[in-house]
View 1 (cartoon, helix red, strand yellow):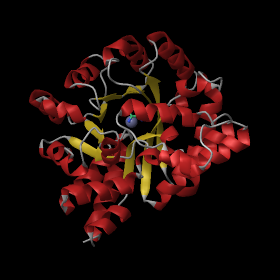
View 2 (view 1 turned 90 degrees about the vertical axis):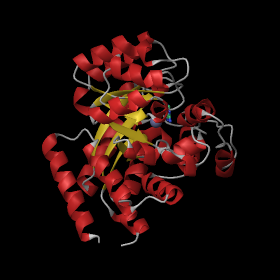
View 3 (view 1 turned 180 degrees about the vertical axis):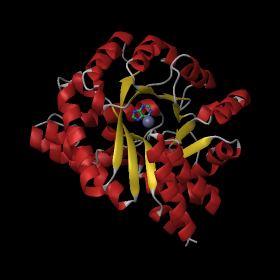
Length: 337
Ligand code: ADE
Ligand code: ZN
């Protein structure tokens, strides 16, 4: 089987995906019309033209603007369902999905509206496609600790629908330590902690996320590679890193994909995984990310298989489900010679 076919056909999990980052321009336009929201774009083509980013903040400004069309429960359902239909077509069998409630509650949309629309879609995807999922609620790190505590309080009222808590938005100037107490309380309440770290921020932010937030997975983590002792620590811990190649390219975290550190991560023994981050904004869903990085780095079959396998190993499935998913993956790969 050629490598592109292997990538397309192998079972995969996606572990780093912001549901609001799957809002395609045509759905954005349709929801703007449905909800009478005025956008600063006249056409779908104008929206696409706005997707030129020099850094994370350039993207975030456009991303928060795009969210303004999401107002009702059915909007959140339509958003998530469009993503899940694509995942079914890409042989993705498990997803762990971020959502940004503060991006909505600050606009007057209730936490319950957001969560119920999303869970309607994820429950239907399990029934219709057999895609399993876990939701991870992110705190926006440019907002205050108090605001994060408010969000956590709302999450505590719906624990059965939210597996973990994460930390996203503008990294520089908002170190993980700002949310040390929020994460301590979240862990106490049973949420699994993760954080974006080392995307633009320094290696010290990755160390802080480990030491202060006690995260169980690192989102991005690219800049950890600047510190060899940190690389060894991450590799020895077995902790997964959710790497997003096309995002890194579009946000200029790497100059080009040929210089992406993914192979170094694997060679250092890190459980690296491939993900799409915000696929509508960065030009590709998870399979597109595998294809692009495999081509740019000339990845071998065994590196691709390792990445696919890592996507299940690094997931937050319970041990029995994880064992079954990895066995299913290994069986597929054995047959796909
Ligand atoms: N929110 C959505 N995508 C993000 C990213 N790549 N980094 C930080 N915050 C985000
Ligand atoms: Zn992200």
